Length: 103
Image (cartoon, rainbow, N blue to C red; front, side, top):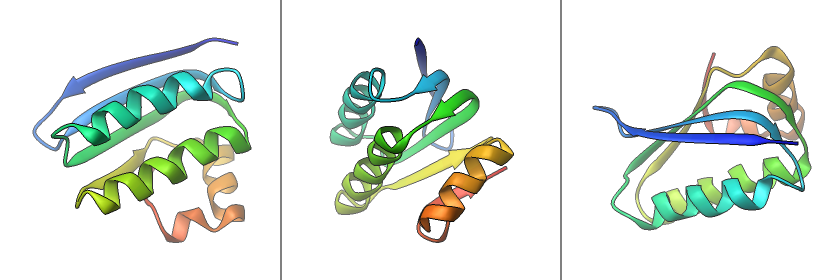
């Protein structure tokens, strides 16, 4: 159960590449890193989920919390490169209608 989080500034905002499993064990680390970005000067956070192999409800909670935090700060959250399985998870929960998602 490992997770890798790489952050890089781009023209569009801060790109956060996440790899591995997002579950009850790894979600606190992800939440901490993303919350720090949201509290800073980052107006746009783009989370690249291409290399995420697993996401549970704890992981979904991380993204819901980040979405609310960004919205309250006048920023935006974008999720990109979702696998079909992750897309389906966000669709089932209704989050795909609220959050910006690409691919």
